[in-house]
Image (tube, rainbow, N blue to C red; front, top):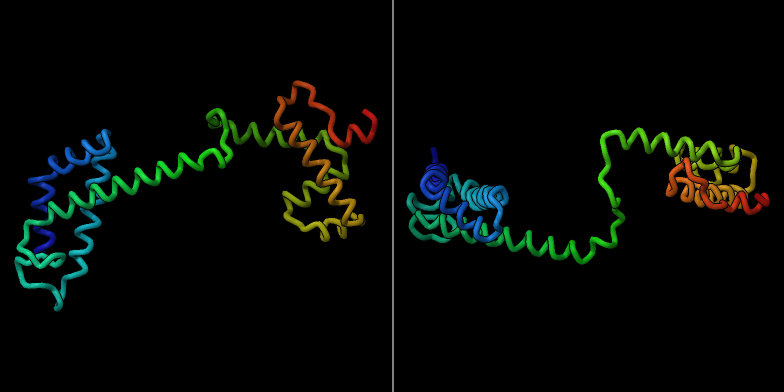
Length: 193
């Protein structure tokens, strides 16, 4: 084993609990504290590992500071603090922008994927045939508007109108449970329903 491996093993064995305790005081959670210690050890000792070879410092000297070995615990403690503060800042920044990201109000269950597919299929069935064809070609076949117009023999503006009307209808249909009547869609209003 190289010197840094011996130092890592000794530090983890002799001071591991103290390092986890230090991290626990910072974060207040056992698992997060253990993760912080592990990440800090990797961060500090991965630097030591890169220093092996002909350019390595003399035995007993620490490549990070040129001091006698045994100062690794200070480096690890500093790395724990830095990692904790980085995570804290990330969480605080996330809280400031979290509201900009769409999220569901309730947790999805294991059957939610199948239920969502069934809901989409039922909502598609309630569209007119041309709207349904435009939606399927655009969002399931990933065709462009000009390509859809070519496939269906329609003008591009007509395809855009069908897509817009169908999107509004699907939005209304999928936000309201399908057993309840949805509000009138743009297609329903045009048709006088």
